[in-house]
Image (cartoon, rainbow, N blue to C red; front, side, top):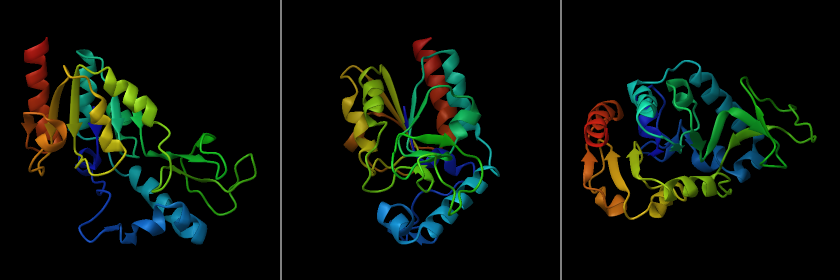
Length: 225
């Protein structure tokens, strides 16, 4: 399955981009790009420190918990665009974070040298290779290291769920292109006008993540168990 900001929004985490094109009142290029980090690393570190602090103040919602409960019936793998840890805390066990994780830091020189990190990252906090630590977040213009793993999971799916994402961010949105022809697709989102345009799915539940997951769990268990 592929999840996006809509599932975390019900826990109180704001979606990535407001209608004015800003993220938490910051221009995207200032806080989510390598150039922004090079220009003003303190601004970027402070921005993600605030996101990391906020994460400690929110809890998984019922949609996260219902997804975890599906593991009692299915082999569930989650591909998420979210950088929070709400899927993990909700009880899911197989999660790929396409865009990185707030609770990790990494070397500024090596995207694969990653550390668990709970607190703030400050100017002068260095990786063991001597570089400034940075958030383990995939910024615009950077490669998506987990994309190949996500494609492999999608290519082996018998059922595929899209929840809480507008399917506008690439390459994450392209994951669905790799599902097999026999794979049945379900879409949960309260806003999409034409989900068939990208999913070719007729199983569209126009509802919030929580309400949609309640309906979907009942549908899947009745249909496949």
